[in-house]
Image (tube, rainbow, N blue to C red):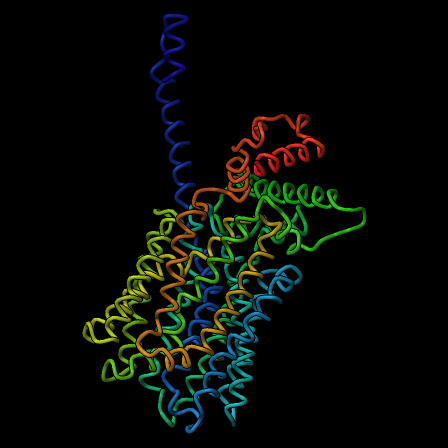
Length: 531
C-alpha cells in the first residue's frame, strides 16, 4: 500500500491490480508466518524438559512432609529430640547439596547434574525404607537432604536457561508448584500408608519416584546455554534450541544463539575487568567477587533477606509438624494437614497466574503482610479469642499468602537479579542460607511450641513485619528487566545524589575527584560538625 501511494504521488499512476493483489498476498503470508512463530513458544520438548526436571522438586516436597503422618508408628517410643533430629537431618544435608550442585552443573552439565541428584534420591530412599533403627533413618534423611539441596540449585538454573523470556515467571514458579504438589501427595498417601505395617512403603516411594524420572531422561535436554558456553559452534546446542523454541528456520536459531553468545561475551568482559582491577596474579572466586562488587551489593542483600524470610516466616513449621499443631485443634490432625496441603497447591496455581502480571516487590509485600495478620489471628485463636476453626482458616490463609510471594519469588528472583557471572554463586549461597534456617526451624519448633504454647507463631510474625518493611523501602523490582538493566538502574539511582558539589552521574570520568579532594571535603565536613 505504501508503494502504491508513493507511485501515485510521484508518477500519478497506481500499481496494476494484479501486482497489488500479489503484494498483499505476500504480505499476508509473511504476517501469518510471523504470528505463527510467536505462537510457537510452548513446545512439547520444552514441556517434557520442564516436567522431568520438576520431578526433583516434587520429590523434595514429598520429603518435606513424609515424616509428618507416620511419626507415631516409626520405631515407637522415640523421644521428641530424636524425632526432631530425624526431621532436621534433612536440612543438614541440604547445604552440602547446595554447595556441591554448582560444581556439578558446571562440570557435568545441567542434565548430568540432574541425573546425579536423581541417583541420590534413589539411594537415600532405599536406605530409609530398609532402616533397622531410627539412627539409620537420620542418616538416610541426610542423604536425601543432599539431593534436595542440590535440586533447589539445579532446577531453577535449568528452568531459567530453558525458559523463553515471556514465560520466565511462569516456568520459574514450577519449582514451587512441583514442591507443594509433592507435599500434598505425602499427606494423601499418609491416609493409606501411615500405620504400623505400611510406613516403610511411604519411604520406598522416594526411590520409586526417582526411578520413574530416570526412565524419562531421554526427554531431558541439555541446557543450550551450557553447551554454547563450552563451544560457541556447538551443533547440538543449535539442534536443542530449534526443538525447544519450535523454530523452522536456521536464521531464527542463529538469532537465539547470538543472544546467548552476546550475554557470554559481556560476562567475559566483566570477568576480565574485575581481574584487571585487582593486584596482578590475584583471582577471586565468584562468590568473593559477588560480595565485593558494589554494583550488586543491594541485590545480594535482598536475595539473602528473602531466603531468610522464606524459612523464618515459619512455613516449614506447618509442613514438618502440622500433626503436632493440629493435635487438639481438630479431631483428625491428618485431615487438617491434607486440607492445608490442598490449599497450598491451589494458592501456588494462583501464584503462577499472578507472577507475570504483578511485580515481584508487590507480591512480596502482599505476601508478608497477609502472613503477618494470619499469624496474629492464629495466636488469638489459640488463646481462645476465636474458635479452633478460625485457627484452621488462619493457617490456610497463612499458607496461601506464602505461595503468592515468599514461596516462589526468593528462588525465581536470583536468576532475574544476577547474570551468568554470579548466578551460580548467588544461587548456591542462597540455598545454603535457606537450608541453615530450615534446619533451625525443623529442630527448634517443637521446643518453641512447648515453651511459648499459643504464642509459638509470635516470632514468625516479627520476622514477617521486618520483611514487609524491607520490601517497602529497599527491595528493587526485577520484573521485566535483565540483570544488566537492573544493575544500571541501581547505579543511576545511587549516582543521582550530589556529594560536596560533585554530581556523580553528570560528571565525565576524567573529571572524577582525586583522593586529595575527597580528603579535603571530608575534613571540611568534620569541621562543620564540630562547630
